[in-house]
Amino acid sequence: MGASLSNLSENGSGDGPGLGDIPESCVACVFLYLTPPEICNLARLNRSFRGAASSDAVWESKLPSNYNLLLDLISNPDVHQNLSKKDIFALLSRSLPFEDDNKASCLFKILCYFSYLILNLWVDRFSGKICMSISAKAMSITGIEDRRYWNWLPTEESRFHEVAYLQQVWWFEVDGMVKFPFPPDIYTLSFRIHLGRFSKRLGRRISNFDHTHGWDITPVRFELSTSDGQHASSECFLDDTQQEDANGSSKRGCWIDCKVGEFIVTESDPTTEVRFSMKQIDCTHSKGGLCVDSVSIVPSELKERRRRWVLNFVSLML
Image (tube, rainbow, N blue to C red):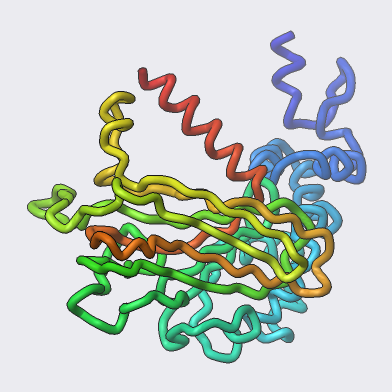
């Protein structure tokens, strides 16, 4: 048995064939059913596996159906024409920032500040599915121009390096819209927010809740709608301290992904337009002490996979 195992990465010996004797085309057929990290790990076994792991046919199956559009948006077409499909996957799996006026306007048309980094696109390294994150800079925020109510805070905790911080306001409303040829799939849209103001002091992260108030009186309403007539909405108290105390947990001082809802894309053409909002417009009381970072649009399958991973990790820690 030990001798057989020693031949896994070599050609067959006198005792019989080894993995190195498997035709490269057969290995490539198997790789079609594996994830990109698994393919890269197996490529180290032998020359046949390494050749199959560089096959364009294998990596094209891992790319989103509209990957050519993404390449046109991020680079000169003459540049990526000479790239292998494996190199294209590696390029798209990085976080792709859009800050140029012309390229950004091809993706979405909303009231925003195009001179800032406003949107990130990337391909998930396990599934090849497209994910998107939209900065608060690309959203219409009521009162954002008045420094008495809102401020922009620089931070390393955001992929956009800056978040909108609400000190106090009576009318809270955040709206946005994205227009993009999403590949067919089911997508989850979420707001990424943080109760309280955070900073670092002597290398330690600290949170300040002096301005945090009003989020336990009236629920915040989240909504989304698409150009083909889909609608979703949800409501929640952002600072429901009584329920949190009973469960022994707290939303304060950490980033929260508030799920708005799901929408389904059946075809990339025509382009899907998604409108989203976050509102708390009960003017009987003020509210404040909230950071708004971004909106994420991620395939629901990936969102669920991440949730299961977090739950498994927490259970192991306990």
